[in-house]
Length: 167
Image (cartoon, rainbow, N blue to C red):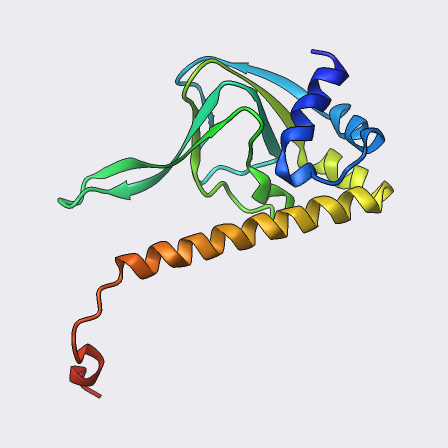
């Protein structure tokens, strides 16, 4: 894959919005190419993470560990992601363990960027770091608002429920 092809993928990714071609080329130079088959587990919930991923071709399923109504553990799909989208971005912010499992839903080509290398690039190029962190903050704010709306839709308040609670 050429740098130009990697740059085409990077241009489509929201977290790299506002970066110029020179800046995108610096990021493209950090990319490792991962070719994964359908069903390949890219990473699992609870694992340590050290890479951000961009989908160049294909699709992935994002799942979390949950339980069925009878208490059996299961994987629940929370999102499907496609070419031009990214995942694993939280590694750039907090370095905590992975919050979900990501599995290739089709044969896929992923661009992987190591967090440490990206951090060094941002230290040497503060404009890149600022743009990416601002875009990440915007994306996280959107996801938080969406989650809040979903939670509100799932909460059922009964008439006088609060008044009936013992104090």
